[in-house]
Every structure is written in structure tokens, then in C-alpha cells.
Amino acid sequence: MSMRKVWLCVALGLVAPVAVASGPADKEPVLQRIILMRHGIRSPTKAPADLAKYAAEPWPAWPVAPGQLTPHGIDTLHSLGKRMGKDLADAGLPNDACKGEVRVIADSTPRNRASAEALLEGLSPKCTPTYQAFPSGQDDPLFRGTGGGDDDDKAGIDPAAVSETTRRTLAELQQVLLGCQDEACLAKARSESKQVLLGDDMAKALKTAGSLSENIMLGYVQGMPAAQYGWGRLDATGVARIIGLHNASFQLAHATPAASRGRGGNMLAHVVATLADAAGNAGSVKALVPSVTRVLVLIGHDTDLAAQAGLLGLDWHEATKADDYPPGGALVYDLVQTSRGKAVRLSVAMPTLAALRAGNVAPDKAIIRKVLTQPACGGRTLCPLDQFEALAAKAAGDAFTDQPEPMGSIQK
View 1 (cartoon, one colour):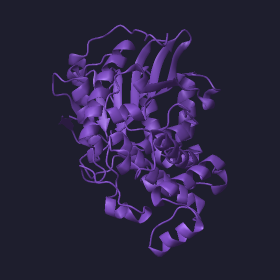
View 2 (tube, helix red, strand yellow; view 1 turned 90 degrees about the horizontal axis):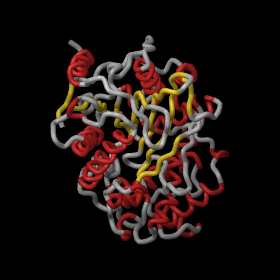
View 3 (cartoon, helix red, strand yellow; view 1 turned 180 degrees about the horizontal axis):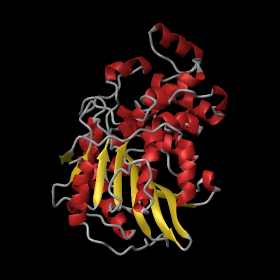
View 4 (tube, helix red, strand yellow; view 1 turned 90 degrees about the vertical axis):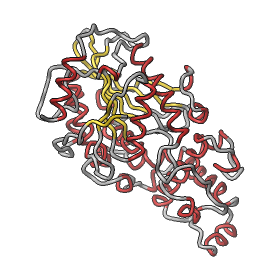
């Protein structure tokens, strides 16, 4: 028996029919919610020794191996799980993973699997709920798509599209890395085999700067002192400013549906199939969970969020929120019931950098929420389901595959 059939049997035995209620902030009753979230706080994917060529001083040491979820990241996800439970209840949705009411699918990387465990520990601490994931080392096409990995997804940045603000921020990051940015400084850095950002190909420089600014941000949200995460040359406001390079890199790399299709088309096709199945409109693309499932959490990467934004033409940048793709940040797909039928509402829920640094997302202002307008659906916030299916199919094109089942449920 397949894992999906096992889950269906479990769901039929444990999830009783429930009345659909509306949340306090939105009058439309929520029938199903799919949450695509980024994993928790991790260390940089490269070791300090590998990053040394970009900075005049050593990069900070981390308590875990490169690319792994940190203990602080685990604690923060516990807090996020508790907050998620409250938010689901407020929206009239079930929130108990112990009863199989909340399903979690994680990418196969260790940090994503660890994030699933930590989130569930916060959401449902009284039991041992399970999540689904492929074995470590085996790419999951739901998250990795059909067009390659993260580096491929950042290809195609048009240098002419890089704004003056981004160029100034790039110069600021160079100042942070080397302690200077004048020509004599850059020449000296090159003579010492340092990799400089200014004067390089702009597309290449922005890709690199996006990663380096993210590494500095990760040090900040990890709770490192300023002397470590920015060598004493950045305060919290400065971190918020330079992470704009990470935002700009992703925004430009995913400026069109065609640029995002390889990474995100497969996910979008299966997310839409899952929403349609819950509405009784099963199609040829497989749903990710049984139609009775009302809450599904997908634990992916910042690249997955950026790809979905590119496919659907979404822009959720807020001047009050520094990072468009913070650890634990989420894009939310709600299937809602309106007076005219079923529709899809999209929103984001992004923890602030200060809340991540504190390890506590419980306060009201710790997460910035925003209901999104959908340009592909006429700029509406509620897109009729049939129209959303059509525009998503056009955006995804043929970049999807029959989604194989993860290799079993994993206990936290």
C-alpha cells in the first residue's frame, strides 16, 4: 500500500468532519491552507575558510557544520510552531499534528528535516507526529524542480536592471567586507588574492553579494555580537540594509515565469492540484495529500519562495521588513469559500530579523503579515479557483512531473 493510501486511511479514521469557520482578520471561510515555508536558522553553506577570500578578517565560527540548522534555529522553530498552532486555530483550521490534522512534507536536506522536527515539537509537543521526506542526499523534485539547483536558479540577472540603490548597497557591503572600498584598497585586496565585488561583472557580483549578505544576516539572527557578524562595521539597521542585496538577487533572477519555471513549476502544479482536489476538482496532476487534509506545511528553501513569486508575479517587499525570505518565512495559499464560489487567497508571514535574533516569534509584531494582490488574476486578492488553476498551469508550463511519494513517514 502506498504512503498516500496509508495517510488516507489514517485521515479517515482520525480526522472527523469539522465546521468551516472564518478567521478574525478575513471574513472568507478557509477550506484548506498550504504553507510553503523556509527552513529555520542555519549556518552558512560554506565553511569560514572557504569564505575567507571575500573578507579582510576571519569569518565567525559556527556551532554546527556548514548548512546545518543551529540550536538557536531549533528553539526559534519551537516558538514558530506554537505561533502557527494559534494562527491556525484563529483561522478556524485544525492545528493538532497528533491527530494527523496537520501534514508536513520537508525537503530531503538535513536542515529541512531538522526544521520539520523542531516545528512539530512546537506545534504538537504532546505526541510524536510524523513528517514526510526523501532520504538525505536524494533530491526531491517537489522542492528541487526540473531545472537544477540553487546556483542555476540565480542565472540570468540582467545587469542593466540593477538599481542605483542596489549598486550603492553593494559598495557598502564591500566596505563591510574589506574595511574600505577605494581603488587602492581593492588593488591591495586583489594582490592578496582576495575576491572583490566592485569592478566585477555586475550579474556575477550581485549573485555573490546576495549570498554574502545572507551569511552576515544569518550571523545576526543567530545572536552573534556585532564584532562577529559584521566585524564591528554593521549595526542592526545596517544588516537590514545589506540583506537587500539578497532580495535583489532573487528578484532579478526570478523576474519572469520563464526564469522560475525550472525550479518552481513542479511545486506550483502540485500545490494547485492539491487545492483543486480539496475543492472536489481532481485533475490529472497528483495532489500532495488526501482531499480531507485541511493543513499542509511544505518546508523548503528561500529559492522555492522566490520561484513561486516569479511564477505568479508576486511582490511582497515591505519597507518595514528587511528580508523578503527570512528563516521561517512563509508563502500561504488559502482555499476560501466566497459568496461566488471557491477562490485562492495568497499571503505571506515573515518573521522580523529582531524576532529571529531573540528566538521568539510569539509577540504580535514578531511576524509581518500581508495579503497579496495577484497581478496575473487582475490584481485581485481573491482569485476564483478556476482562474487560478488556469494561470498557474500557464506559468508552470510543462515543468512538472508525477510527484513520487517520499520514502515513508519519519518520526520526529
